[in-house]
Each structure stands twice: as C-alpha cells, then as structure tokens.
Length: 178
Image (tube, rainbow, N blue to C red; front, side, top):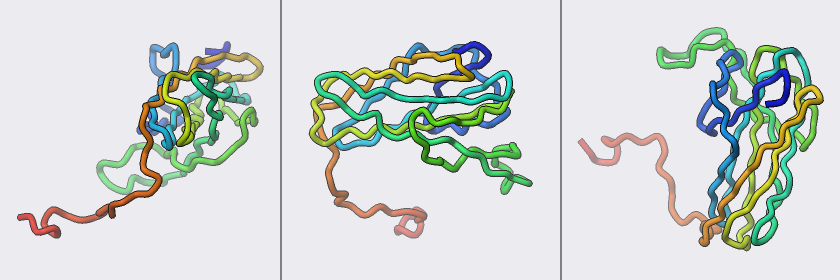
C-alpha cells in the first residue's frame, strides 16, 4: 500500500462500509475471468490515514491482443437513519451508488474511512482467448502503488441476445408448487 494508507481488493459482492477495518493481509494481484462479450467488474478500497485525494488508473490489457481498460466508478454512500429490517446492515452510511469518473480523477479520501472504487472491464466479442495483463496504479496523496491485474479470456462468447425470459419475484407456490 502507498505510505499513509491501506489499499485492498474485495469481491464485487462486498459492500465496503466506511467504518469497516481493512483486512490484515493484502493480495498481490487482481485476478479476473471473463468470456468474450462479458463485462467483468472488480473493486478496490482505500483507507487513508488522513484526509487526502486518491487517483486510480488502469492500463490497457496486453496479451494475445489488447483490451481497453474499461470504466471507473466511485462508490458513494447513502445516509440511513434507521435499519429497514432486522437483517439490515447496521451502519449509518451504506455503499450503493456508482458514480462514473474518469481515470486519474481526484476522489476525496476521508481520513480513517474507506473509499471504494469500482472498475468494469468490457471484453470485446472478437477478443482473442488467453491471458492478459494490465497495471492498476493507485495514488494516495502522491504516494503510488502499482497492482498487477490479470485477465483470462475464455474461448467462447456470451450470446449477443438473451433468449429466455427471467422470472423475478415469484414464489414456488405461484409456479404451482406446494
């Protein structure tokens, strides 16, 4: 991690709370797996010791071809006055909105709190299958760290059109079960 901060990766299923403690161990790289035509996200979190600015940028992926670095979003927080149900996350600020930002944009990093960043890599439908590498550069208050990002592209493509209807918000009973 850059001096005066902790940078770590976490799954895209994790909601990084402002007050959550960073993990004890940091991974050495980010590993991604995607099919052709797939969008694959990943998330990092930064916890600066003092108020500061974070800048992040991802290089182009190089391998059997090249793949653009994709998009970057700042994870914002929603103020919550009270939990909505007994199973709710107990925090006054819940991470949810993804605000698009440009690579290298200034992101406020409040001291002693977490600030996640969300990246999405789009694999072209005509990308060559194989292993690609890129570099994620994270700068916190002028101290930078390069993190290797590895992407494996499988030798198949997702369908261009979805050919089935999803069934959402149905119960087993509504479908004839008992």
